[in-house]
Image 1: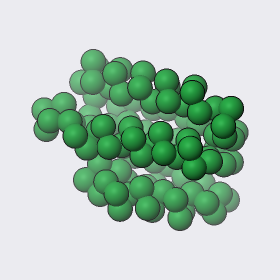
Image 2 (image 1 turned 180 degrees about the vertical axis):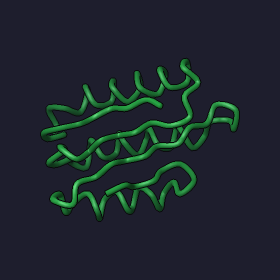
Image 3 (image 1 turned 90 degrees about the vertical axis):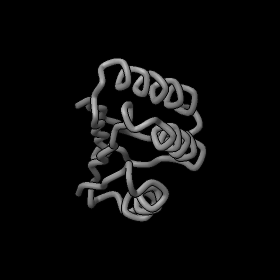
Image 4 (image 1 turned 120 degrees about the vertical axis):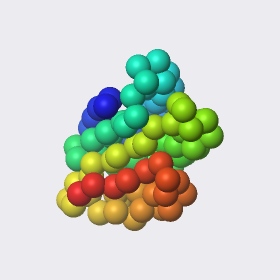
Amino acid sequence: MTTMSLSGTADALALAALESLLSQLHDHVLAAHHKTVLLDFTQLGFINSSCFAKLIAWVHRVRLLPEASAYTIRIRTSEKQTWQRRSLHALKCFAVDVVTIET
């Protein structure tokens, strides 16, 4: 399993870095033949729509993988961050076979 934690604020200043990070994460998981990625969002205070779109694009890439390369994404959330419940529920609905949400 591969684990990545995000903290602080994912806003316009973080957009390019987040896109690069998600691409590197995807490549690493495929090369390592891992079957699960754990994203820890418990310390992520905010993510803007542009950064959230990058997250959606990454999840979409995962959805398109052939079964032999496929992996799942577990997202650990914080009950203190109310935006997470709404936004990540929508992400899970987009990719029910790929994304699970943990509180």
